[in-house]
Length: 218
Image (tube, rainbow, N blue to C red):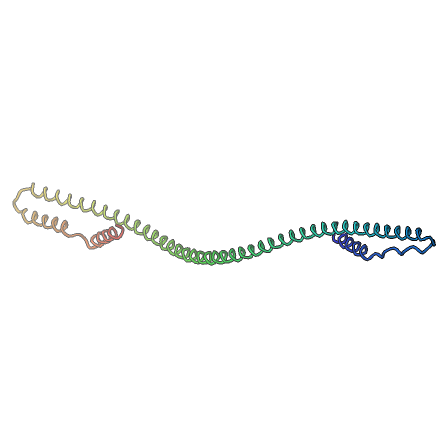
């Protein structure tokens, strides 16, 4: 039964309570016994009708009580579900606020990390540029060092050849007769010693530059 049938039962019970009693029968006979019998019959019928009304009232009252119990149980169940839903909605609101706060904090940290990454990227670009310049300078220094090394090797060979020629001249002069040759020997020795002791000015500049380059690249 639904809500409408519940109200229908309620109206039926009210109608049973308000139903009028049947009218008494008209006096038909003059016999006192007949009149008494008719009166007793009328009373019995009235009592029977009253009992039927009470019985019907009890039945409908039981139905109303059962229906009311069902509606009360349904109402309690719906109230319980509503309270649970309200508690769940409140908990979801609290969780949502908590997650929003956590998300805000994470977004702030992410922005800070992005700024830090941007700064580090700029620093890395600057370091890469400096590294490129250093590599270019290193390549230039290596090329200059190779040139200085080649020039030094050539000068060393030239000096060795000059020294060897001077030695050969000294040996040739010493092997010749001594008369009138001492000034030549002295001149050759002095010439050889001077050439061995002092180097040309460009050679000194080149050697000094090569040594300075070795110290810078060490």
